[in-house]
Amino acid sequence: MKVMSIFGTRPEAIKMCPVIKELESREKIKSVVCLTGQHKEMLQPVMKLFEIKEDYNLRIMTENQSLSSITCKILDMLEELLNKEKPDMILVHGDTTSAYAAALSAFYHNIPVGHVEAGLRTYNMHSPFPEEFNRQSIDLVSDILFAPTQYAKDMLLSEKKGENKIFVTGNTVIDALKTTVCKSYNITECCEDDKLILLTAHRRENIGEPMKNIFSAVNKITEDYPEIKVIYPVHKNPKIREIANQFFANNSRVKMIEPMDVYDFHNVMNKSYLILTDSGGIQEEATSLGKPVLILRDTTERPEGVAAGTLKIVGTQTENIYLETKRLLTDKDEYNRMSKSVNPYGDGNASKTIVDIIERYFEGKL
Image 1 (tube, rainbow, N blue to C red):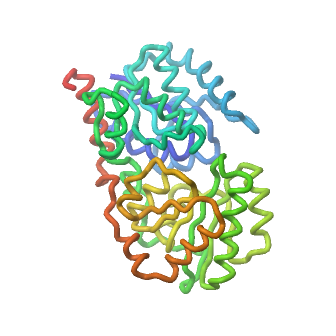
Image 2: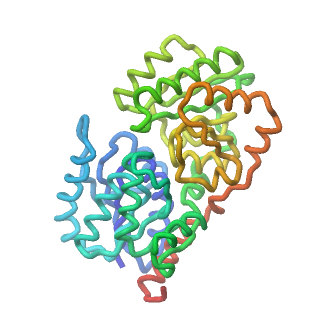
Image 3: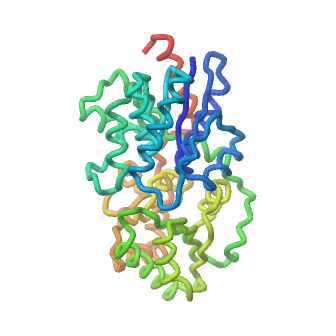
């Protein structure tokens, strides 16, 4: 049976590559990989690390691309490809515009959709934007819903999704960490006495005043705690770079770098003392590595980590970010409580579980 995996961004690639490797290991399945090209340079290092080659690349990326242009291009280009390949199932991941457009195209072609990382919710269509809309829409047309946690399954059940098509699998990013994290990794961006904070800030809804508030808090932290060094891989969005340069150009304690490949990023995360982020996937990765995470958003679709104690929502107000970071830097008990929380995202066998379910689906055993 032919399974086509369609994705286009680095976060999708990190979480889909372990699934693709598992698909490739099965005799009964032909795996076809299609990249949309929503990300370009950021995607290929992930593919190389996992030794996966794409069969198709739609190469849709253009300068200053819009959400509507991404969606329209993918729908248009998949029309011919799906008619040619006639896959028995389309696999998509998460909540990107690539995943949304691919799932919609599969639905139009009456091809079954498997949604990896289904059931994440904030129920706020503007936070995160457009991801909340994307993931809810994908779940509407999916035939198999691979929920990473019981909480995600409960969200799907509350929306009247059929229990017979929902499966709790764990999160495939935990599988990916088995390949990427190296205990002997040597980080050169800090010295032995530094406490390293990893910062990521790139969400569309944070561009503007929220991002300025975040960066102000970081400057205040480095000013008051000279033992702190911050590494900030700056997103390629020119608006974000303009704000980052405005705030950090004269701060020697904040190291602005280009986006890292997944191997370096996961290992820098593993070497960090704590993490400040508005990202989604990092909340899962850091949890599995035992790193406290302060979420630079007002909502999260990953409340399991908050409930477990390793994640804390701090929003985008300067004073609150500063105070919560200060607490982790000065209160050892609070730091230990967050860093030693139980990981709710699985045991690193999600990919095998997902492909086992796909095989059972083809055999008519679900």
